[in-house]
Image (tube, rainbow over all chains, first blue to last red; front, side):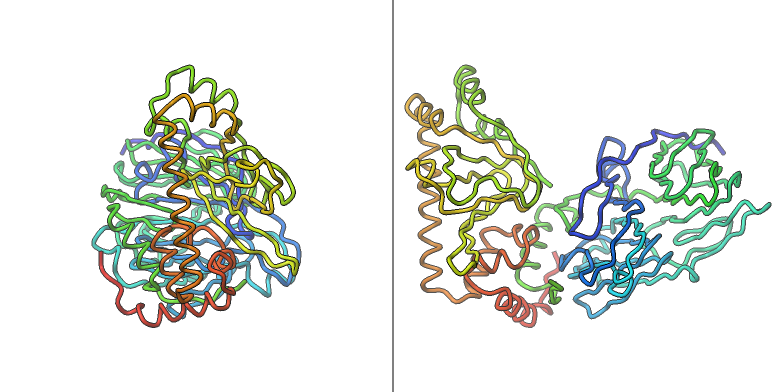
Length: 294
Length: 201
């Protein structure tokens, strides 16, 4: 097995507001190497770095909006997210939990800081990752996977190095609970200072990691907090070593779909025609109905 | 979001020579506005046309009771101007505000007039834009007089399918001349009738 080389390390770009609740650094799609095609099947990655939220009765967030053609994966590192959709689903994504929403044929969705959490306020930190669906699944029925922290696969690293929380895919035969439509690995490496973990993914898979807490050395290269590492498509193996206490690194790797992408905002399809159909279906109420919170 | 560069727009519509374009651009300003920032307020006089390269803006008035009435939306690739200022040199009765992070090219009306005199194709483009604008306003008046709120909503989303994805519901309601509650009702009725007829594309 060959070492998977680092293509580049990317510092967070200036953050922008999504609605009035999420202040995010966007990593995908952005520069060359991080376009939707370059990171296929990962088509969007927004990162809300730790940020203080003052106590409020009016939680910030994003009101009703549609999605079609992909999955949204929301990882709440700090704070809580309350969500609801046109299928009648709803709930709270707690600290450390993940919500894997398959929008597929279409949902209306809204997401806010959780009401009770917002009353007290505190640190908020979140990742939202969009995973593209293959053409055959884009118009399938929407679905939810609510993955609590306790549901995740847990691999204890030797010598007290820390643990790997497996959300999807597997780490040394420890499986993650998320059902995916194509091969995807998504996991948190929670490492103690000096703790080290090795990873191996097929060379063809598009692979990146994000240091969400602490600091790490990846293949011997120092990576600061809130920075993203993109790997090349050569080699399989890489290692992460924490160089600060309580380091958390989100690792993602997925087999590219290699299908055409036609995207506009919350719709990601294969053709322009399908995009126009998505607009029409949304405007004609074919995504269903969801009451605005505001 | 998408971008629509004014220079590309010009090149694909008119054949101005280098000097004409140079003069036009020398008299144009490019400005960025944050969401919520005003391009123009009531009472101000503005002799610039706006070309939106990125983002979205709205033109609206506020009545004596403090209610907002949305006249027009404009997104990337569109022109918007305050007619009172640009054509009549009078103060605006409207506000023009960015509803997303927006980049605008401000075109000096004197330069637009000069090019209109000099260049037949530019004159034609300008005239056709104005004709199209008048046609759109007439259709809007007729809809407000004769169509139901649902018909107005359906006409709006047919003409501008992407706007409902980008602007708050209350603004769309204001544009249609209805309350946000009525718009909710229309959307919920449509969903009840159409939700199960989703087409696979």
